[in-house]
Image (cartoon, rainbow, N blue to C red; front, side, top):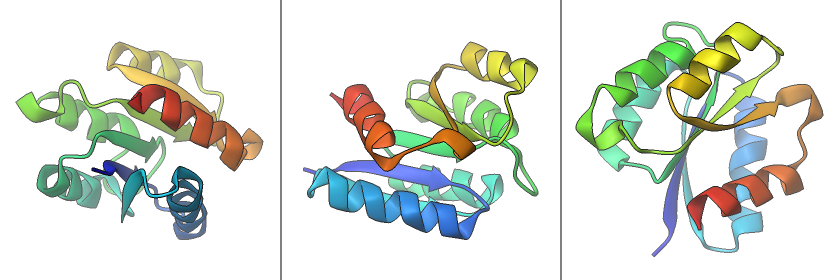
Length: 125
């Protein structure tokens, strides 16, 4: 059965690139859902109960950290692995994310699909 991955990112182009890359690179291992802000992301997470969430740090309506806090407040969301995407090397937000159980970070300007796929594969093993 395919593992469910939720991408929460207001950058629709990057979200599509990640989604297509995970679907193609995962060779059927992953079913990928998208949401474009933290509010919608929480609704999709509630409905789909993903095995992994990739979320942007800076988004309209609900930030990645606020989304993560809301997720962790739910019994079903306490242990879902999360990879945080960011444009920033903002240590305060990164350390807050680590305290909330973030498993890894992707700096958007430095990412490659191969690196992301390896990270996702490692977390979902």
